[in-house]
Length: 91
Image (cartoon, rainbow, N blue to C red; front, side, top):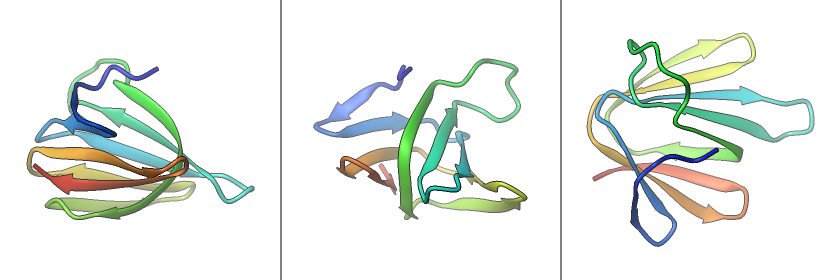
């Protein structure tokens, strides 16, 4: 499931108030779930398997028992580094 708007090769648009929820798994992978806005009561925009390497955009990080949430504070882009690695950069 990926309904993110593409903004270039291996780059997808994230909204200013997007929340990226990262669940860490026992095998070392992560499940990334992207919501356009944490306050909206809508289904996720995308789910990806891989590792979120870094968040370069302005954000707040909240630790959770099974991972963390990156609450974005500016328009950003999700970039694929390779098959299993992702970075969030400001647009």
